[in-house]
Length: 249
Ligand code: 13P
Image (cartoon, rainbow, N blue to C red; front, side, top):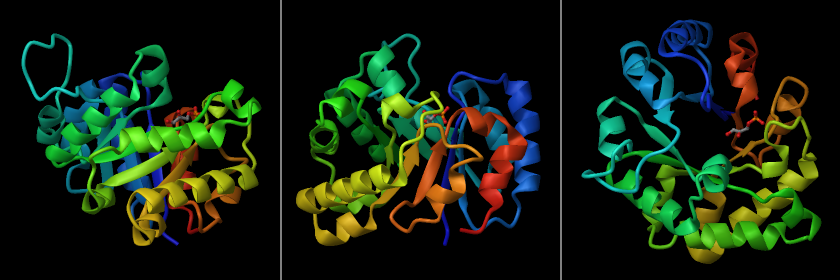
């Protein structure tokens, strides 16, 4: 079964390093059945266009401004990354929500701006450890979905991937059990069904992110309820990322 494999580079690699990486990845993953998406820093998107445009590998940005253009020094707009051939943008990553104080209102506006500019959205949701310990993870993720998707139409959902990334599992090596992930993907599908329709709930693409690596990727991707994975640290290791991208699931 075809899966979605997303590499989130975060603030890692230089443009030159990415150039070699992209060339190697395009060669090494040729023929894969899976959808491979890499999201390097903004500064690498010109190189991505050079190397990856027209290849089987999709690429995207890690963030966009919620504004279209204007006096927003230091910001990057959706149309700028679209012009560089980006197909996707990550919105609402927990590092942006936490470290850059992006709330659900901003996330919602960013999704609308992205979709209006023809970009596909990778919407990240997920709880922190305290919320999970207090048994409020389900409520928390539901509310994120309700607020983030406000005003988004059902026909736009085909351009949205939901990434469930529990904050306590990101970069920590802590493994979330497959049962826990299954519970959350069920909950996400039910909430999408509640907000839109049964068809929308069934059809929405959900990926999991948080310490995905060589020891757990097969166990995760062998399940039908999960459409793919989103990988941070390990995507920087090209041989390991290639392995995950090439596998038949
Ligand atoms: P790690 O794979 O490093 O835990 O990062 C996950 C992540 O945040 C992907 O967006």
